[in-house]
Image 1 (cartoon, protein in one colour):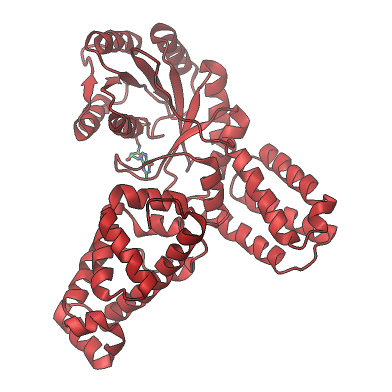
Image 2 (image 1 turned 90 degrees about the horizontal axis):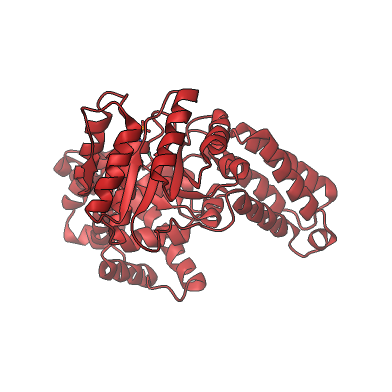
Amino acid sequence: MAFEGLSGKLQDTFKKLRGKGKLTEKDIKEATREIKLALLEADVNFKVVKKFVADINERSMGAEVLKSLTPGQQVIKIVKDEMTRLLGEKPVKLDYASKGLTGLMLVGLQGAGKTTTAGKLANHMKKDGKKVLLVACDVYRPAAVKQLQVVGKQVDAEVYSDETSKDPVQIAKDGFRFAREHFFDVVLYDTAGRLQIDETLMEELAKIKEEVAPDHIVLNIDAMTGQEAVQVAETFNEKIDLTGVILTKLDGDTRGGAALSVSAVTGKPILFAGMGEKLTDLEIFYPDRMASRILGMGDVLSFIEKAQADFDEEKAKEQMDKFRKQTYTLEDFKEQLLQMKSMGSFKDIIDMMPGANKKALKGMDFDDKEFARSEAIINSMTKNERIQPNIINASRRKRIAAGSGTRVQDVNKLLKGFEQSKKMMKQLSGLNNKKHGKMKFP
Ligand code: GDP
């Protein structure tokens, strides 16, 4: 995920804070200085950083923090609160018009992910039972219409386009009329972007807005853009008054900090986060959960939701029981790997884990090949070996490697992964029991 560097640095600072029984003003100054540098390095806008750090300083210097029995924890909590506030405080749901057609216009620079996001949103809204029309208003980029058609087909949403026209405003109007006449619930306008902010484009977008009066005007911001993301967001907001923002490419490994500033500088909520290229890779944006992830506290809730959406619940329950009773075997591990494969990248899953030994786990970022290899290795084991992995000695490892067409290192890696997974899931099942007793997931 983006913010990895930031996350690592903040965790180092937190570690120092936790290690101290008592905190002095100097300790807090030092910690806030580190936080400030980490944020600046991650590309968070300097004005935003200044305010963020000042707020933390002010709240942390209070007597109740310094005198508390756990001052380090208190400061960390303050940072978490402020980070949540920076990201918008409360999640904002994209609402539908109380009756009739809901209009949503997607805007942003070229490559920000508008077309992909249009598909993701259509997919998301279809799950809400909505009939969605996608309107292709990008008449400049070659193949933009075709791309939207491909995306529409993938999510089974109809696309309105007019390849004979070069007039995006007219296409938007026609699309709107088509949506109304055919009783669609939502009409999504996929508009053109430019490489940079440009006056003509802004005028065009303003005209489309005027003609079709969408309920939502949502800016796509690529989390991989650096500092200029802030200016882009400010300009779009000034010219066409946004209603919300979607951050895309948060799965990337760039610094991402600029994206963190977007909500603060525009005052507009972040509605969703794009977490990959697939049309299912869209997450509702929860400021507090994202703050937890950035601060390395994990995001158990999102993990569990993802697990609930993608896992077979009965199977997951069974596995959690096994973790608790310590009867988890390599057979179960194989099954779990197969389930994870359907959930997306292993790295994304690890990012949501609280604490965990992320560095050790990062080494085993499973791609499809790894999944196939792991499956082959486990298939080459005898039943006894799968149930009691501790009997797998060097000669057995050699035999398993030969049988699965892999190397002994691969077998070692898999066994290590199995042990890590056992530990990690045990930790998760414990957490889940303690904190989220009411949830459906066991
Ligand atoms: P547009 O020019 O704004 O319509 O952008 P596109 O939808 O064509 O997206 C540009 C590129 O970004 C494409 O290759 C997409 O697959 C990719 N993309 C879009 N959203 C995401 C995301 O959330 N994560 C990743 N990794 N790639 C994305």
